Image 1 (spheres, rainbow, N blue to C red):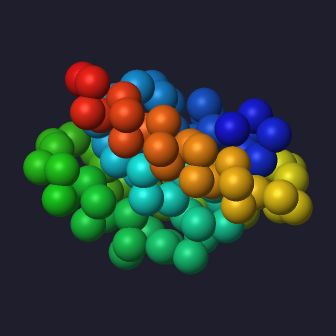
Image 2: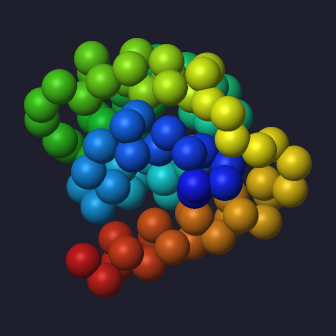
Image 3: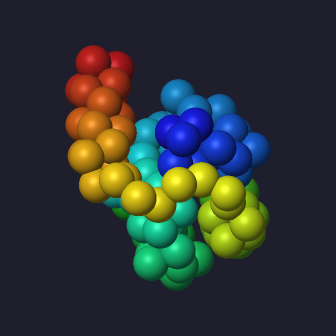
Length: 93
């Protein structure tokens, strides 16, 4: 994550939270998050049945993705690895 999305802690906050794990499972890197846009991030929050300020946080997450200085080359394998790790954490939790 530090290589491809160095701002992930600022953008996502608590990395082991339910929403963040679901988001990492579906769209871990800036390119993926920008493809979802705010309207694609909000249903993830809703599908996990979470409450809170997630809808307003979607725009903030996208702000960090647009300004990210992470690498884009070779992200495919890492993308799969992050999704797999997030899924394993969710299953173990």
